[in-house]
Image 1 (spheres, rainbow, N blue to C red):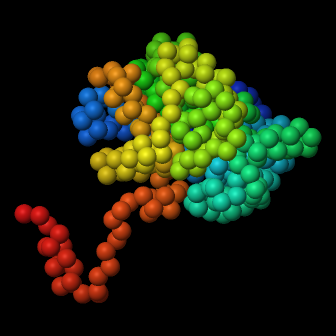
Image 2 (cartoon, rainbow, N blue to C red; image 1 turned 120 degrees about the vertical axis):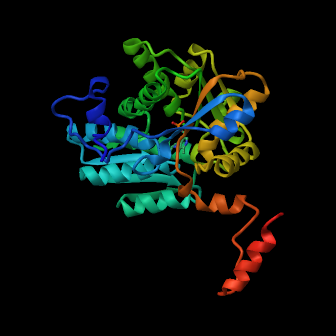
Image 3 (cartoon, rainbow, N blue to C red; image 1 turned 45 degrees about the vertical axis):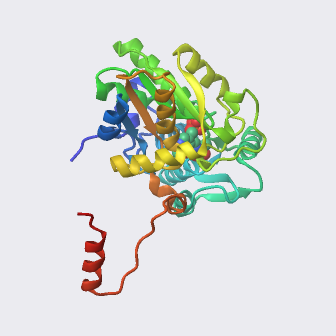
Length: 354
Ligand code: F0G
């Protein structure tokens, strides 16, 4: 039985908590750092994945949300609100339920994965769809939170960043030091901001070193790379379908200060990485997560990531959140056979190559 107490209790010395902060937890954090044995050998680098899909609601958002909701509760708020491409809304709904707060989530109509929507409704959030994209939804909830007594729990809430920075601590603890490279998907750019803050704080306290921060947007939503707002972002990786990232400047700074880069990957590269990770390593992460693997592959080929480097790719969300993309992506579907052992035997034997 693990004695892991959850993020707030485990990292209180690094977090803005005091005696009035509720020790809210669903035992988030402490996620596995898994070595990619097969792909490391093939690519000539030492790759690990930080598997954030193992968090209670299946994404890294739980780290930020536990802090944001605990602080909202501490400050006497009764209602939380967020815009979301799905994972933030799932996490807000779960922690809101746990803390007894009203939770309102605003999502782009038809553009969030089914599992994420199921989570928000199961946890009892009030789900509002907007005929618009994430950026439009964020504009609305930001404005509402300035006028109404509701707490905004998107990553523009600084407590979200505080909670999410703890993933960098765990990476350093697992490896004994920071990796050479941290590869991470970029959507609204809160998580790359949080990791960079975490690496810097840990280095200051424990001398763990600093990685190159390499962030990856989807090509159809690559606002930072193109240095312009994308009015109609489009990508198969719906979680990062964002055209005007709120933490844009912080992401640019993280890349510059660490001598890394914000780059993009195509949908084809994302879907290739998505399948490769599942088929070669037994790890199922949602499409947006796989932007980190696709980006690693791209920059090994370009020579920007050197052979022999120690690389951590952040896998931000669980593959089970988005079963539709999985079924649309794989060419081979389950074979249907009669209810009869013979038929199975002959099919299996026929399928065995000698
Ligand atoms: N990966 C996944 C699975 C995500 O859900 C998100 C963001 C990101 C990567 C990008 O992280 O925004 O900090 O750069 N999802 C948000 C949401 C926008 O509403 O769930 P970021």
